[in-house]
Image 1 (tube, rainbow, N blue to C red):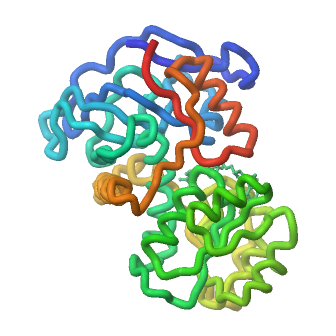
Image 2 (image 1 turned 135 degrees about the vertical axis):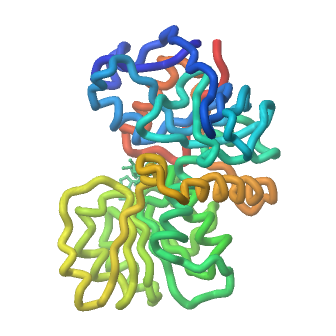
Length: 336
Ligand SMILES: NC(=O)c1ccc[n+]([C@@H]2O[C@H](COP(=O)([O-])OP(=O)(O)OC[C@H]3O[C@@H](n4cnc5c(N)ncnc54)[C@H](OP(=O)(O)O)[C@@H]3O)[C@@H](O)[C@H]2O)c1
């Protein structure tokens, strides 16, 4: 099969940072695996971060978002059949979606939204799982649109995760949604996705939040958590909760003590990495998100079509996420 892989850790400017390869097919699916024909993939910051790590096993296929069609189902698979259109993020410790064929555990695969193209669907899984688990499982925000009188601050609103987190918080909860953006185009994007208020993270965030006179009882921090930590703790309402998703240096938990406030990591690969008994929750949430996308409650965050799935085009995608100014998601689609 055709695959895009890396075998050496090289800067994204090097034409060999990702390479077009001919690799063996993954073989027949076992257990609850599905063998999926990949039609479209998106690029996430995790792709670039993993590319910087040498793999002792040799050439490694990245790609943690995909949309495609099930070719075969393992003997224990019960959720999907050959021919089903699906979307998924997969697992960090298995070969990724940057290949014509991929094996994925059906418990982390969702039915693809019928109203979306493969490219529009491939933009969604990893960020939707992250935002969904972050807002509902970790921050325990109620799935009830009745106004609560409280606010959630989403740091990094225009990024891949922020772009779906804004929509989930606005459409499925009763929280006022505050987010951050530092450019006119990212500010407009966040407002268009449903944010009630946009503040500039390059200015004094605490002063801007204070001026809104809202009770910020939840903070979903997608970026720069360690740098913002003292300010986030100061802005948080007593008994509130912060959830962060970015890797970072140590933060001072004692800043939360007087407020009896909490902190939670969200790691969307935790369920697959540790094979938790509730792995199937990712299938359920993706399938529910698909219904919300089909109903028009949510919309795709696809903003950039990179062209066919080639090393050159995926390298352009890696360069975009490494640049740190991505709006929504970049997707590659089809094979040449
Ligand atoms: N734990 C997990 O499961 C998980 C899952 C997904 C992602 N992540 C991590 O979460 C982070 C964000 O991922 P992503 O895909 O959303 O990123 P992304 O799409 O690359 O985010 C780009 C956006 O970040 C904003 N930004 C840049 N610097 C900022 C800052 N200092 N403060 C606030 N916003 C800033 C920019 O907006 P402006 O131009 O307006 O400044 C830009 O639009 C990455 O580190 C990623 O690896 C973790």
